Image (cartoon, rainbow, N blue to C red; front, side, top):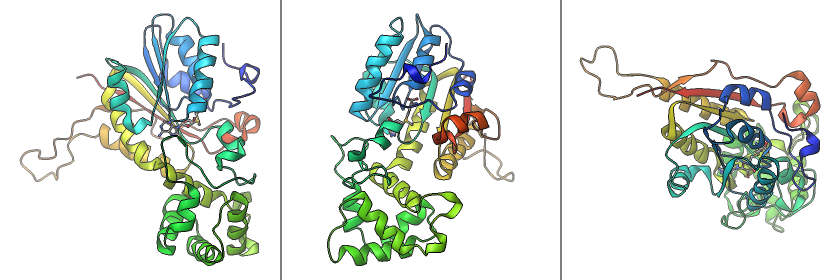
Length: 326
Ligand SMILES: C[S@@+](CC[C@H](N)C(=O)[O-])C[C@H]1O[C@@H](n2cnc3c(N)ncnc32)[C@H](O)[C@@H]1O
């Protein structure tokens, strides 16, 4: 059985992306240890749990307390037969989380990156450029102190330009940074809509709807990545997950923008390569041995039907790998 939208609680409504492809790629079996590193609303986890039950273990990690509590309830209500653990934390700390849970090894890892629909839909979280709210964007407000407001109001113009360019791939990075600095000299920029206004003023009218997207999309992406250190966390999480995989175990990663996808591609490529020493060296000095085998060379993408049904799936890319024996 595959989860339907009506299964989703009204409190935590998130349609799992590329669910069929994830199940096919990870193919969990009874007895497997499955670790969903981005539990969210447990949309993927419910199905993974059904497949590894009754004797498997379903571990779900999320840094968001609200998501974790709602997901735990859904798993206990919908897949009571599977042993499950919900672990609060950042997947960049995967080693510590799995060690403390005394997990011997993992057969299937899933990373479904980014924010979930409820995080976007609750205006107070400050992730959405459609709703007015304080500029926050912390995925773990209980632990993190840096907010998007602090970035916007305290970073230098050069640093703002750098993060908008690097994390948002924003063509108008320096103009937006310049307008932000000019505006905050009068009064701090405190809310999402104040920032949207500044961004709209900075981008020439004819260029504001490039590719049909909202003009603030790239700036908000960049701020979210900076506030949550998302790219560093991803690299660390993937490296740990590969270490924890049992031989023959599978890892699947769904990314939503090119910066994330590049990191997944590079980590997978690096860990699937053997010796990279120049051919004229008499002995290997790099010590690289392949530890995973890549899934398909090109990432899988959602079907047109899925995108029509769930527009949030439209930029998804799924990459996978299998741990080699030995
Ligand atoms: C796209 S949602 C996952 C949705 C889930 N697959 C489902 O179908 O319901 C991503 C989730 O991962 C969490 N998350 C993002 N980055 C994280 C990190 N570095 N460590 C732990 N959780 C993270 C977010 O809080 C969010 O709940």
